[in-house]
Image (cartoon, rainbow, N blue to C red; front, side, top):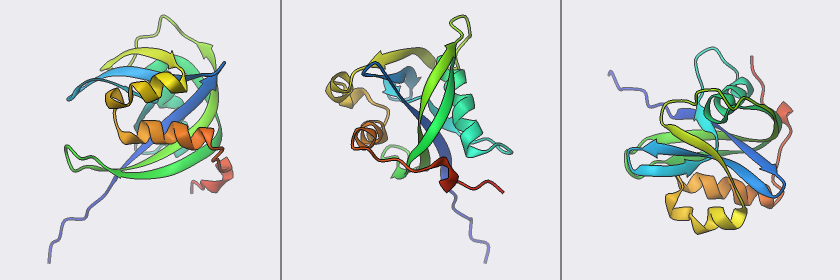
Amino acid sequence: MNKEIWKPNATVAAIVEQNGLFLLVEEETSRGIRFNQPAGHLEDGETIVNAVIRETLEETAYEFTPGALLGIYHWKHEHNETTYLRFAFIGSVSKHYPEQVLDDGIIRAVWMSIDEIREKQALMRSDQVLTCFEDYLAGKQYPLAAITHL
């Protein structure tokens, strides 16, 4: 019997807090303009940690240094039935390249307070966005050593 093998999409996201503000991206989506953490898909041949570093740079023009794993989020998109496994990382940003062209669909990087994020919940790309911030504020985190790349 040739049954198609189901596979979730592996994605990464960066959680960055600086001076009480969180780094997000404003982006064009099929449902209009939305906000998200710097995030994207794991590419073939790259580690999960390298993926979040790359995605953050491509979407925000900031160098990201992961410090901990926030968590792994399993979510099924209600509009297209796609399932995602999101690996969210806590870290910091350093060097900024303001002249860098951002990824397709990214309008800009933006810093928001948690109150602004909560107020704009309806404009977040998914429920994962606020959930990740709330988990971060609750102190959830795991060592990067929890991820093994073979």
